[in-house]
Image (cartoon, rainbow, N blue to C red; front, side, top):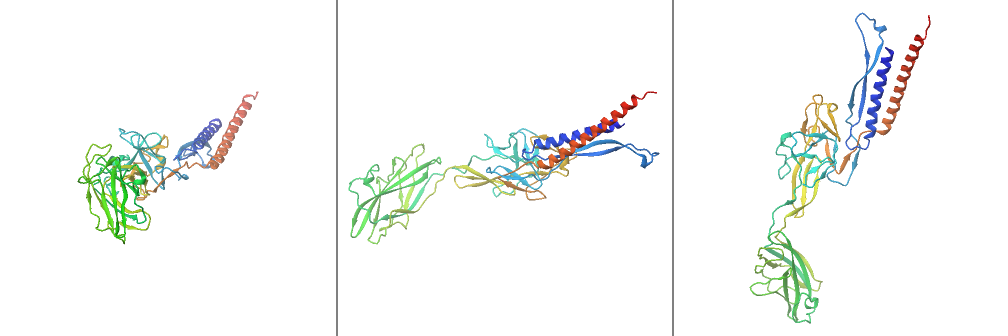
Amino acid sequence: MSFYTSLSGLQASQSEMSTIAHNMANVGTNGFKKSRTEFADVIASSVNLSPTQMIGSGTVVKGNFQQFGQGNLIQSANTLDLAVSGDGFFAVKPDMNASGVNFTRNGGFMVDADRYVVDAQGAHLQVYPVDGSGTVIATGIDSAVSLRLPATSGAAQATTAVTMSANLNANSAVPATSTFDRFDPTSYNQSTQTTIYDGDGNPQTLTNYFRRDTATTTGSQWSVFSFVGDQKLVSGGNDHQTLSFDTSGVATPAPTTVNFDPFTSAGSTTAQAFSFTFGSDTKQTAQPFNVGSRNQDGQAVGQIQGVTIDKSGVVKAAFSNGDSQAIGQVMLANFANPTGLRQLGNSYWSPTGISGDAKLGSAGTGGFGNIMSGTIERSNVDITEELVNLIAAQRDFQANAKALDTASQISQTIFNIRS
């Protein structure tokens, strides 16, 4: 029996060393959870055997139990790197057509070619759908959707009105050139550019050229020529606006709104017309030329520029047109007995009858931890602790091997006895 007792110790020590080696091999695996081998002694007893005379029959491995302690949290520059500070697992779907989901603590996510948020294996991060305010509108595993970043936001709107307030320099000289030529800087005094939008949302550049026509003791007069790209703007056959100022620099009369004739800008197929108004703050002083304010009512289709995720897991996308849109809330899962989860590799787990069914929720509620954006959870393996455990397991293995060798020598001695 001593052979088998020692053999059980050898096998148990070998299992422990394998578990420790697996832990150490994954010290750099994000979201990995170490395991610990648990043993139990083997006793063969009967009702007619005195408790003081019972001898054990070795040991057995009761199981390799996962340890779901928090790993170190490391900051990163990627907003989509997520970590759960506390309890909870991310839910990921292996592919779009998969019927089930897997669970992971590895929150290293990225965007694929189809704008889905996926992990390194291409599994889709699952989120709850939300309304415009970020409020969840459906819960449960069947309501979860794959997180996908929208490419655009809003609808294109052509510019219909432009307003501007400017200060024209009273010390500007009248150009010596008698006619305006936008390619000749000596034929005008100042210019300024404003971005407007055509019917397709394409940006166009509106350029206003300011030319001083007269400077007298009673006031001065300016002409303003306007172009969109190379297209000269006219209003009722007039190719420029006129601004007049008195000796105190006040516009007299007050500027009126000019409605430009329809035109077709480069790259557009639709004619566009808009109005232009100089604001009441437009004046002439001895200060350098400057634009005090300018506004236009057109907008382009917003292109996605960035994503933010708050501690409750609400994902918001920001767009170039100033829009901000909530697109989902990260779904978290937890289990009554996480140590009973089945390991699938790649830091994935699936539920079993031992772990119980997944309890679903969102970060910061119902016992779930907070979500940290721009953070990765590393393995919870302590390399120093594992090395000490490995030395202890090696000593256990050597001791059992010595016991087996001793039993072998005793048996050999008995076999060598001669009558």
